[in-house]
Length: 180
Image (cartoon, rainbow, N blue to C red; front, side):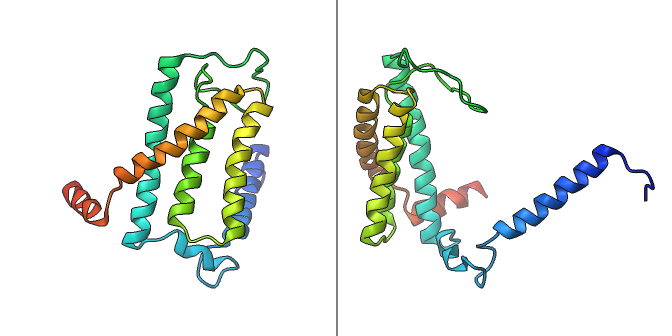
């Protein structure tokens, strides 16, 4: 034990203690009797849950690839009033068409509405969330309206492609068997 710890040692120990305390407080789904323990089935280890989560992952990767290809082909510059003045952000590309946020929001909204049993008010919130994501891109000056509108259209149709490429539990098990 050090009798005269350094400032950095004390700061690091304090940060570690705060991290542990905060992590424990935020672990509201840690076990079934936790305050949000009923949400645990959404983070599933069942075959059906894994199927949905893996297909969502596949859908998101597909979206990144398709948006990247369209942006590379179209090469539309971001709006002239766009400023990269937000703290702790970075831009992965210089192009604005289509809005990747809008494609992912539309595709994820369709995915969630199709694969999670949601009550009507929650369904409205999912659609409102997707709309606000797209609208925020225009408000921030990152995209033109047509970038977002086409992004919504593209994301909507991307979900159809996800359904065609859907990985079934049998396909998942055979793929996992080949990996082992």
